[in-house]
Amino acid sequence: MRAVHVEKHLISRIGWLRAAVLGANDGIISTASLVVGVAAASTSAKDVLVAGVAGLVAGAMSMAAGEYVSVSSQADTEAADLARERLELATQPEAELEELTQIYVGRGVEPALARQVAEQMTAKDAFGTHIRDELGLSDHTTAQPVQAALTSAVTFAAGAALPLVLALVAPKAMTSWVVSGGSLACLAALGAIGAQAGGAGIVRPTLRVTFWGAVAMGASALIGSWVGHAV
Image (cartoon, rainbow, N blue to C red; front, side):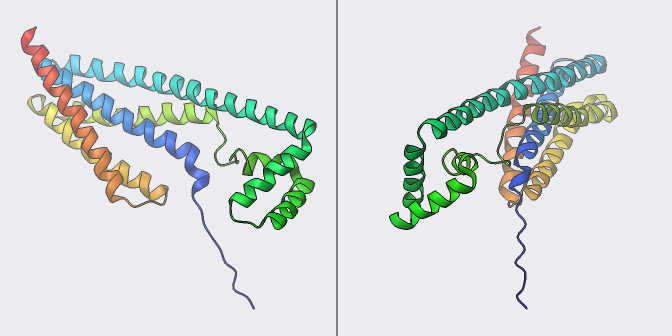
């Protein structure tokens, strides 16, 4: 009895995973940077909390709108290409068949066999074959604006809530340090989780997100301190 070869690919997660990681990262980094910057400029816990909550709400809405507009533009482009391809198949079938043949030849298939494969694939599903092999589109990569917008908004809010909680529980004099340290730990954990969910190694993504988070918070603290002293 032949053994069954089972493969598990994670490419199907790419749409929501990208939006989720981006949203959570932005939520943590932007809100933590905002909290740290305000804390460096003001000794008022109320100012810090108000700024953090405002950043959470504004950021979540901005992420949702930005993702929706961006991914909608991608979806519009895909739809236009699909319509164009459908028209070309209807009006120029021989040219499209030759184009498909050359695609397979370019991938290493001998011309005669490539023509035969192109004819068989066209007979079965001409449109599906062309959008996959010519345009490079698939169910895994098709733009989904609503999914991206909702995922980004929810994960941004979840990420932004972490620095706010840290700011609430931290001693007033230690707010910047507690928020920075805790947020960097959360970023490192998020980088590892995102890499694990995507099936990638965890070291480089973790170091990357932690480094840039530290740069953002450090710059915010420095500017907040300057502004606080100037005002």
